[in-house]
Length: 268
Image (cartoon, rainbow, N blue to C red; front, side, top):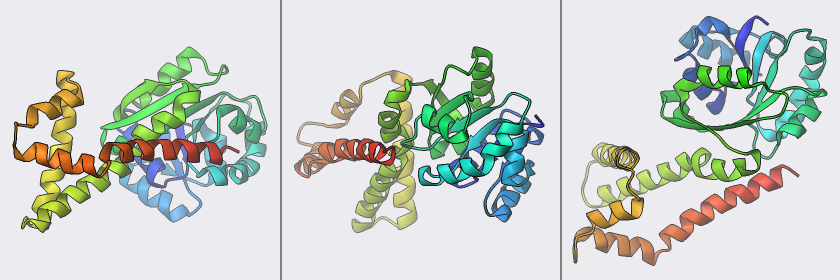
């Protein structure tokens, strides 16, 4: 083992986790690899990490992040399984592929390997993310503690039973896309009423950030916080009524449910 972390795949999620990792551990202990080598090399130069080929990442990392899409996992494992089989030292596979449980990933890898399954989100890149995780029986408590300590720079790390991963990802993993849609829509409304575009986007984003922080720091229920803003006969309750008339909450619930259903389809 030459690197503490090695990443196979430096797309949106792989790069977000790499940025989180360098907040806690030395960049010299991280190897980045990607199908398009230039992509990994560019990120490695920015973060001060090493860059290498995919087989090297499989051969030299202790925690090997499998940052590829679910439909690409079988092909990746076919490529690196001979490399993994030749290793004499201990290593762990870290998967973030939707729809593929740890048993399936180990089977694809061709061995009874220790596997950590994570479901992170893109805000991990700035230390404000959510990273849900679970591990199979092969992972020791010390290894789990080492992993979570090294990933502490991502934000909130929370252990979640694997059978709930899809639901957790529907809220926290896919949620940034839903929230960005809402922020963009709020800004569009502001623009429609005369606000300059950049100001509208800034106000909407800071409002989302501040409201979430207020809820977390006070422990208030979001319904209670909503009621506090809604004066009788005022502007806010008129807006809430408009959202409810268009099934706002049902649409948000359906979005999460759709992600879980899709996760199940991808696992078949």
